Image 1 (spheres, rainbow, N blue to C red):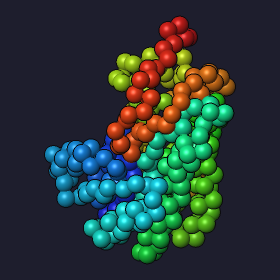
Image 2: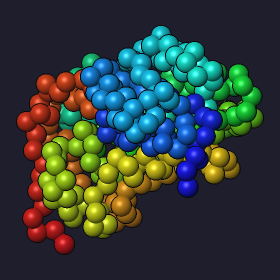
Image 3: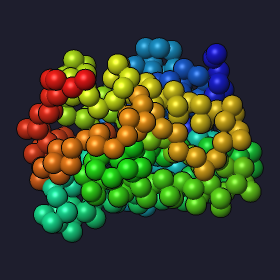
Length: 295
């Protein structure tokens, strides 16, 4: 199927890399006009160049955005309306790894910054995105990137997991409030997806990292989440709102103890990821824990 987003205008945060990059290229290929919002101007330009090579250069622009700052989120939404006349889809996807230390060693500043980037950013996106979608009266779709870490304990650092759990709850509340405007609000909960957020540097390393953690033999790719966002952004999902779509290769279905707790709380510091800032934190030195004998 082609043209599933024909005539729609979308904003994708964290659009310069990983899931956001895959979604941006997929959305324009399906007929949407897209604004990618990111902090990395170089990576953003790479996406614009790729879209141009694929024949969609006139349908995509970029906007330098810190999604934790309200004025910048408002400007991001405004850029879509100014450039393309309306907004139909908002994909709140930008994220960070955030505070990595155990709770007893996490600083307030690290905790707050994690929440700002992962949860406040989604609130701000919904607030200003919904206002723009309301203006044309046709309804629309807001999609939030949550995580399997927000659905169970122990599968991610505490600050990250708490923020992602908040995204799941906020998605439900917003879906109720915006239903009368025909604005659908849904979340996607990725599992182990090979993006800049993960410690593996290549596909083989990622496969070894995920061995024993999910039943599905293949590792998750950014495109797997982009396809989920494509569905939720399209009219095919017209009766879907307030839901969290889990895309995890059966990771949660496998049950408890997926990630030993020591692995998810053994690091210190704060790590950035798909919003595109240079990674100078301790994460740059973290190597994946390899499960050689997992069945």
